[in-house]
Length: 143
Image (cartoon, rainbow, N blue to C red):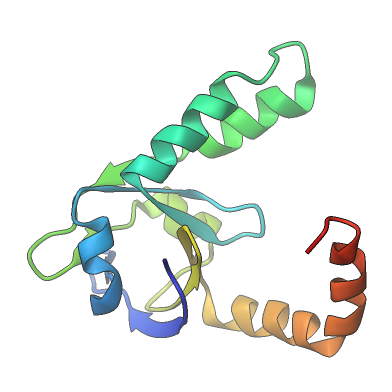
């Protein structure tokens, strides 16, 4: 399970060090792709394989299904972290998430997200602004 928030830096080659507490869970491989909110999503290989299968089964006749598949697959890159726990974030993904030298990595149960620090600060502030409203809306989903 991935939990927490961590500040990290990308080196001059675009490599990002995975937080030490997550390395064992990602040692078998991971996939980095575009996230929905201008961040990057990082999936352990086994979680990605399940998600990819579900996306592949979406109906080709629905435009949003096709576009979601394009978003998720076209920018995806798979890796096995090196001995120092680093992964190379491809330039196109760094540009998409507006990553330069600093990044925030957050744990979201079965995946991680990688954020530009300023973008994460803005999103986090909006979420923390009115958590009651979010909780009320999620009540309809039985949460």
